[in-house]
Image (cartoon, rainbow, N blue to C red; front, side):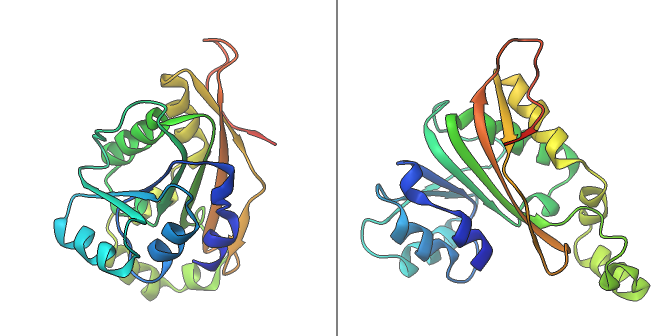
Length: 200
């Protein structure tokens, strides 16, 4: 959470969206930093009500909807924050969520994703077979997420919306077991250029 907040300079964008509610202090701190309030969506009304109680009056703009089918207009946000959601989704749901995220963010905006790291084969927790088995039981879509190339998935999603992404230098957390990744969204140079990320 600290690394996410450190990377989230809300002054670089006026309209910010957090995809789904999360526990802890992340949402209140983001809402406090957002100059125009923080838009937040979740499929569960109870989660939205909990988030509203944690935030100051007028700082949170909640809406009940599905991350795979956002009701926001295209190119309507300057920043989108995604915190530990993708690993909880089956592959098709992840793909639709990434596509929607790239649809609603405007060129020049930034995406911030906090998630499990790339398959951490050298990490001691991953090498501990009982722990890896238990984690796979508790998070059944995590093993599949570990095998996915997030840059490629985001690039493909960007390309479908006439955009491309630039990867900002990464922040490994807990020796790479987790990651905080940021991308700048640009207009695609041409239809042939695709959306694949390049380092900025």
